[in-house]
Image (cartoon, rainbow, N blue to C red; front, side, top):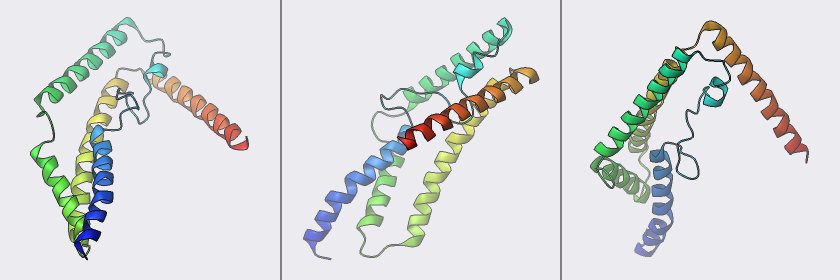
Length: 165
């Protein structure tokens, strides 16, 4: 491949690669960079509709406060700017994409590292959700399921209506 083609390829591929990796590193935050809360099966607005006891409200508040402090400590502990591991990962992706031939085994290794990191984050999130839901009584859990079902049905109706327009 001629040098001009490599430069052109790098000019196109690198921004896309780094952009997509930064989205993954962002952890799926909302458009304005704010944390929209848990993404799987837990909606704090629905939990607030469950007639929580004062003890449950206090425990929920403490869990959320502890979680917020953990995130702050983790954020403060991170180095400012990209870490050495992230730089190495970016380099590995760049090297893979700019190579004359595609190396399937390197691509698998990189993808597995990314998937492992994402899986670790997902497990932490699920653990926090479990802690929150463990505060609820069986009746409250049942009511939460019903509220989630209602919300899903309304969302499906809105989507169907939108598709018809």
